[in-house]
View (tube, rainbow, N blue to C red):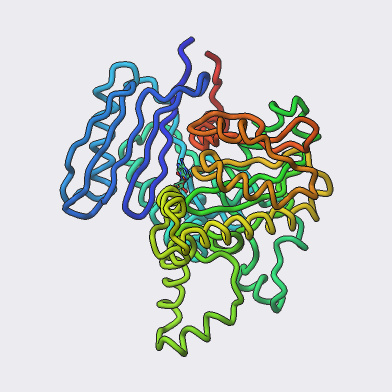
Length: 401
Ligand code: ADP
C-alpha cells in the first residue's frame, strides 16, 4: 500500500507555511511558504523534491494563496490524489483541548473563543482552516494545538497568584506553548536515552524566535516557562519574557503611552533585539559579539543567564534529570549559547564536550556532554511530522507504508 500523505498547514497573520508529509517515512515531497499576504509583495516560495521556485502573488490574501497552493498540489503527479487529511497547527486551545481533534463547527467556535487569549495567532489559524476547508472540502481537517501538551500541568504550576475569580471568570492562567515540539522532542530523547518515554525526566529548551522551557516527566508536561501568552519566561527574539509587571504602568506614565502601546513595546522591541539594539536574530548578534560589540555580548550573556536560571527552576517539579535537551533554531545551532548555559549548570552534573557541541549543528543530533557527565542533548524538532501523525491518527487513517 502507498503511504498516505498529509498536508500540514501553519497559518500566521501574513503567511501560510505548508508541507506535504509522508506519514510513514516523514519525507516532505513538497513544502513552501506563501508570505507577505495581503500586500503587493505577496509571494509563493515552493520546494518540490529539493527544487526551489518563487512566484509573485501581488495582493493575494489567505484564500487566494491557498488556491495557488492547491493548483501546485494538483499539478504534482506524486501528490495529487494521495492526500488523505489536512493537519492545522493552532496556537491556543485554552482549557478545551488536551489532544488533537477533527475540526467541526463546535471546534471552530472554541478556537474562535480562544482567540481572545491569542489574538495574533488564533484568528490567523482560523482564516487558514476556513480557506483550506474550501479548497479541500472532501478531506478531514484536524487541529493540533500548541497548548494541548501542557494541559497535564497541575494547578500549582498553572495558577497565578492573582484573585482566584480571574481564573474562573477570565481564564487567566498559564497555558504554555511549543507543545507539539516538546512532545516530539521528548519522544526522540527517550530513543537516545534508550528508555521508555514513561521513565524519562527531561528539561527541554525550545529556542526559536520565541523560546520556552518545559519540565517533561514520563512524556507529560509538569511545568513550562511560557504563560498565558507566549511572552512569559526566558528572553525571546523581540519579546521581553518575564519582567516585573509594574514596569507596564511605569512606562505608560513616563513615556505617555497607552497600555496597548506599552504591550507592543514589550512584544516587538524587547528581548534580544531590545538588548542588543542590532537584531532579533541570534546569528547577527553572535557575529557582532565576535567583533567586540559590547551590547551584543551583553544580550547573549543575559539570554544564557536567564535560560540557565529557568532550567534550574524547572528542576523543582522534575526532581531528577535524565537529559537537558536543546531544540529550535538557536538550540539546534548555537554552540555558543549551549556552552554558556551548560557551564552555568555544573551543579546539575553537566560538563560540556566542546567538540561534540561544535559538531551538533544544522540538523546533527547527539549528546554534547563529556563522558561521566549528566546528559545534554541536541535534538532537531519536527513539529510538522507530529502534526501529520496526529492528523492521520485522529482522522482514523492507517499509516502503513
Ligand atoms: P521560529 O521560532 O520562527 O520557528 P527558529 O526555530 O527557526 O524560529 O529559530 C530562529 C532563530 O535561530 C534565530 O534567532 C536564528 O538566528 C537562530 N539560528 C539559526 N541558525 C543559527 C546559528 N547557526 N547560530 C546561531 N543562531 C542560529
